[in-house]
Structure formats: C-alpha cells, structure tokens
Image 1 (cartoon, rainbow, N blue to C red):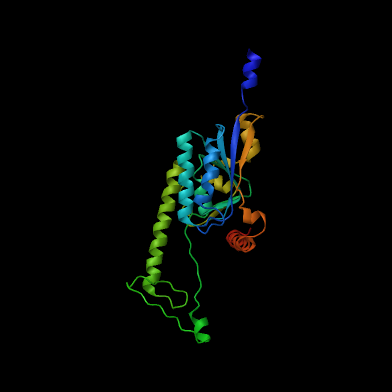
Image 2 (tube, rainbow, N blue to C red):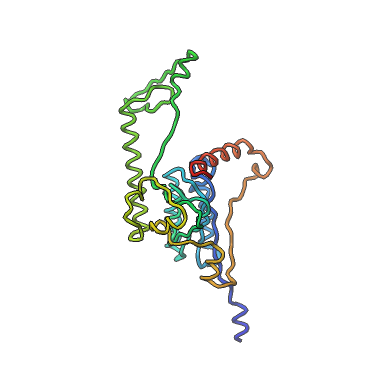
Length: 264
C-alpha cells in the first residue's frame, strides 16, 4: 500500500515565466494583454509550489508595468502561490516594477537593478521643416489639446505640465516599491533618483534579497526532483511563416535602444 501511495505522489513543480524585453503598449515586447494567458496558466496549472519569474527587462510603459505587476499579485494571492523573481542582465525602471511583484528577488552578481525614476524623450524638428519650406498647421478646440508638438517650438507651460505628470508617475512608482519592499530598503538618498545598482550593491540597498540563480535555488528549496514547467510566448501563424518581419525588426530596434541605456 505504501508503494502504491508513493507511486501516486507527484514531484513538486515550479512554473517559470520569462519576462524578456521592453514593456510596451504597442503589441510588441511585454504587455498585460499578451502576458495574461501565460500568467494564468503558470499559477493555476498543476498546483505549482511557486512561480519563478525570469526577468531581463530595461523598462518601458509605466501603465503596462503596473497592470502586469497587479495581475501577478492578484494571481499569487488568489491561488496561494508564492512568486520569486530571478533577474538576469537587468531589471530596471519598469523591469524593477515587475520584479517588485515577487515575494523575493534574486540577482546575478552582475545584474543591474533599480533606476526608480521616470523618463520621456523626443525630438524637436521645427528647424528642419522650416529649412525645407514646410509649414505645420494644427487647429484645435481647447487650449491644451495640442502640446509638445515636435514640429513646433516648445512652450514653457507644456514643459511645466509634462514635468508635473512625470513627478506624479515617479511618486506612484516610489510608493509601489516602498509598499512591496518595506523595511528592507536602505535610507540611501540616491535610492529613488534613477540610480542603478549592480549585483551585491542591490542587495545592500534592499532592492533585492540576495545573489542566486533559478535552478539551484529551486532545487535547494523544493528538492532535487523538482520539475520546471516553462510558459513561453506562442508566436502567431504570421510570425512562424516569417510574414511579420517588419514588426519584428521594429521591436528589435526598440529593445536594443532600451537595453543600450544600461550598456547592454
């Protein structure tokens, strides 16, 4: 009878979800809608002992970062499954927001974490179109309808309004990090300035919990026979037949630019 019960006993399972690339709202990279099916299955299929997040993300959309992190927390609490994040090259800005959705965060000795700040960037092209004799014509109803037009000179009131938005987003980001990391955080005044911390320094500042890698840590915690069930992105039929080359190329350029900010 004992042998029969042992035969029925299944080995512990850890679900693995990879969060790779920039966070976008354009249907490329990471976004809440495309990640939802993977995350749902990771938390509910086969009663996993934990969900491990493999994070390699330089940031991106603050709204999508918030939505994805909220979904992870909701699924974790509804299914009583802990979440453990493992950072590879970088979890910065929105990438760190995702990492904070985990109950524990571990990094490699060379991983970059932090960059708790908000950034926006663009180009001013008004001199270029003037050089070619092009006129920009914009008609609006409502004095605030058109702002930060790259083909028109910047207005002081537009810059002030934009900075106000960025400050509000920054405070929201800081509040979320504090709510998740709590007393673990150091009192370093540079912690929320957008500074990036490498490996052990991230541990020292309380941004992460330690140095560690996914497979050996999960085996130490759940036994050597633990099984890893990976949940990866399913490519569309068009992608499989190479019919979305342009979209893939644009996504690759955006990812490259995002990672380049960290020398990667």
